[in-house]
Amino acid sequence: MIEASAVIPGDVYLGAEGSDLGTVFDTMPEQFGQARPGYPSDLFDSLCSQLPAAAQVLEIGPETGKATAELAARDLHITAI
Image (cartoon, rainbow, N blue to C red; front, side, top):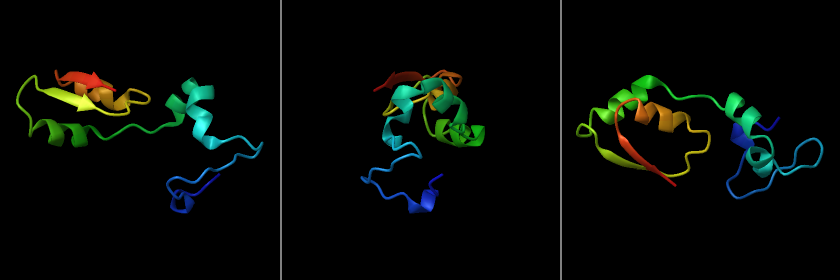
C-alpha cells in the first residue's frame, strides 16, 4: 500500500502486480466505490448554508457520486462533469 504522504502528483505508481494504480477506477469501479470514504455531512451543511435554496452547482470529477448524492439530498441542481 502506498502511504498518502508518499504520493507525488503526476507520478505513476505501480501496484504489486505491476498495474498502474491510476487505472483502478476503470477496472474495478464497484470496489473503488466501496473503498472510497464518504464525506462528512457537516461539510455539505456548511457549504449549502452559503448557497441560495435550489442553487445550481457544478461538480467537477464526480467519481463515485458520493458527493453528488450529498448535494442532491439538499435539493441542489447539479451539473457534473
